[in-house]
Image 1 (cartoon, rainbow, N blue to C red):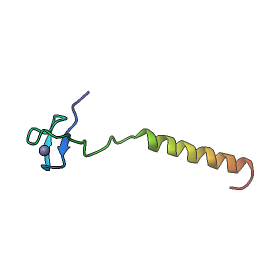
Image 2 (spheres, rainbow, N blue to C red):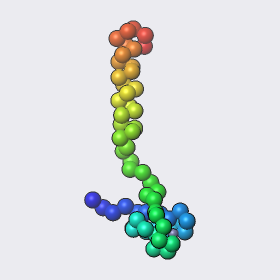
Image 3 (cartoon, rainbow, N blue to C red):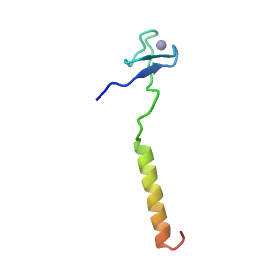
Length: 59
Ligand SMILES: [Zn+2]
């Protein structure tokens, strides 16, 4: 697994480390993964809802 780019919001710099090399504070990963589990399950819930409505003849 490749290392993530981290960013220190205090110094506004990028680093490969979880601790900022400048202020030693916590860094964050600026971009979330492209595919998130939340989106996947949200889409699944919508699909289930539509099928449920179709069965009831409401869609
Ligand atoms: Zn910093």
